[in-house]
Amino acid sequence: MAKLSVEEVKHVAKLARLAITDEEAEKFATQLGAITDFANELQELDTTDVVPTTHVLPVHNVFREDIPAKGLDRDLMMKNVKEQQDGLVKVPPIIAQ
Amino acid sequence: MSLFDKTSAELQQALLNKEITIADLTKEAYARIDALDGEVGAFLALNKAAAEQEAAEKDQVPFEERGPLFGLPIGVKDNIVTEGIETTCASKILEGFNPIYSATVVEKLRKAGMVTVGKVNMDEFAMGSANENSAIKKVHNPWDFDRAPGGSSGGSAAAVAAGEVPFTLGSDTGGSIRQPAAFCGVVGMKPTYGRVSRYGLVAFASSLDQIGPITRNVRDNALLLEAIAGVDEHDSTSANVAVPSYVEELTGDIKGLKVAVPQEYLAEGVSEGVKAQVLAAIEKLKELGATVDTVSLPHSKYALAAYYIISSSEASSNLSRFDGIRYGFRAEADNLEDLYLQTRAQGFGDEVKRRIMLGTYSLSAGTYDAYYKKAQQVRTLIKQDFDKVFEEYDVIVGPTTPTTAFKLGENLDDPMTVYANDILTVPINLAGVPAISIPCGFDNDMPVGLQIIGKYFEEGTIYRVADAFEKATDFHNAKPQTWEVK
Image (cartoon, rainbow over all chains, first blue to last red; front, side, top):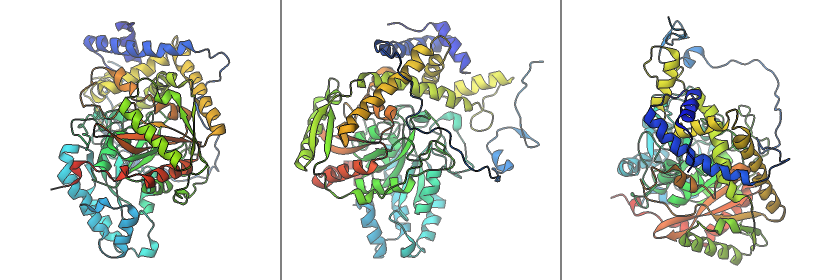
């Protein structure tokens, strides 16, 4: 069974912003390898000139009148924010000292 | 005996005759949840105080102002946002999240006069087929507590099967309404993609997700879909197609109906017990005047792989919003990058992480063409299979699942085995057509589901077939032993 390399899993985890331990990377490498192995059977099919489907219904641009309307209340929108100050969302430092 | 032995029509008659009140119905729901849910595990947040007050107010509304669902209790899957009721998607990352608006379907339930009793359990972010991925608690199948209720709408199906509520809403991305409905012996409909607004449904895979009703009989299911369907200015993928009266379709007459049975849906992998019940159901449809032919959906075997790539890719993008900043769980960290990494590592369960990583991998430069684009091309071929059969036939019929409910804990370490369970349901989501699962018998005392697939926006035809079958059989009246509360 082909498995993804531990390095590949760590790279993907980093792209997806998931902290991952060496042990987890090992486990996910095996599991994801089994899934991608299985997915490789799609390569049997000749899909030359087959248009990819992103959406099943023939819906394209959906327009509406641009009428100004009140959005959600600001205080309400802050209701689930864990840390806040003066109506702003507070986060840890973005740039290291 | 329970009030929930009755259909919605019988309940409305009892209300009209003043034999019961809406307050009684709400009380019955909470009494049954109290008595049963310790073992079933279907409910997460309860809305008791508000629901009891609403019920009392609704009892004052004159009968001429009430519709067919007015005053009836419903449970809502926990990935559908409800203003004022905690919504977690059964994930740690959304613990304590209190939505500040309600999903369009929830607004529509309110307009129909239904009473939201609480939120029902599910696989975390709707990823799973056994409800074992809930970060909060397991759901147990009311027919056998050692068995899985199915997933991801396991709570929705189990709550209805146990008679805790007569109605629930679920969501279906690859079978998440139909598979648990089959496992729990209830009626579950996945509508056409775009039939029901997804506004306020926490997105898993946006091109596949649909909300749909779970009930104990076909007529109630049709009533609930009618109430929640329709175009919505908040969802640009909701379809501007008129919603017909589905109940008017329930004529019981399917003479001359053309039924297709795909050979691939009764092939290797489908258990003998399930096959026998489904073949008997197909015989019943013939007796009722339908003509039945065997057809082929030749790309069926590729649907599962295409589905897991497409749904995981969309999920990896959709779930990037859970970063610990604006809502839900936030990990302690010294800088922003670590906050993201730790919040997501601690907040998501393993199955969600697996799918995010599979999706991220499929969308990466170097793998995009071989995985994501290839899967979308295969999706086209699968859709064309259905289009072709529907040129000649009214409905496609087969089993909902290859087996009846498996034991809890059986497949925990092997994701691929669990994924294989979805083989008969995922092609329908890829094509975007509607499909229902209805009870059609038992195998080793566990319910078997019959899947009826229809043309785009022809849920009415599906309901007509399902109702004709239900009227000619008695499977929908069977109840698990747990139904009788001591």
